[in-house]
Image 1 (cartoon, rainbow, N blue to C red):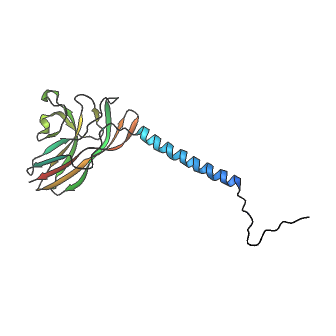
Image 2: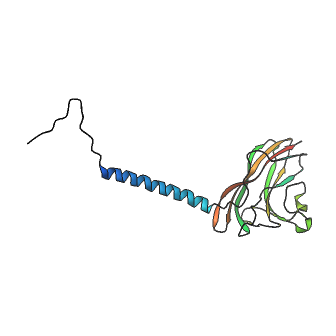
Image 3: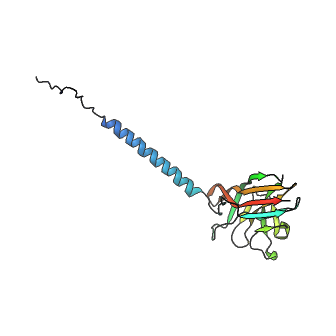
Amino acid sequence: MTTETLPPGATEPVRTNRRFIVVVVGVLVGLLIVTLGIIGWRSYRHPGVFYPVSDSPDSYGAGSVHTPETWGMSYAYKDVDPAEVSIVHATPNVLMNTAKATILVRVCTIDRTAGVGAIGSVINIRSECSRLAPPDGATMKLGDFADQLVVTIVPTQPGTVLVKGLHVTYSHGWKRGPEDIGMFLRYRAR
């Protein structure tokens, strides 16, 4: 019987357990597949009908105290099919409101006789819309003469209002999800 001896200072080689390595690699691959599946499912289910809100103010307004001003907030991508969405909930992203303004979100059904294609900024919203309704639970038509989410700011004192679009949860076909849409507004009441 012979015994092998190691030279001085040498250590015995460590034997890795192949079964352990296979299990660890399998778990890591499984986690990767699940993560990619979740990311893919979320992006596949996300509606993405409207243009997202920008990071810097793209509309400026100034007016007198107690004088309302309204802005269109929902601009849909072209040729969206099906041509309607159902709004679950819509709220303004208010960053500043030193004018102590009332901020209303509504759905405007564009008045075809007014000669307006979409709401930009307007003082008298009632002259542009044949119907104004609360957004929660509303169904909006898209395409030509689309319904539009609008924000009306009614200041009660001099100051500034910053509204970074709307946070809207809606469904489009079988897709449903939240999205930040609209314009980044800066309004100064004097």
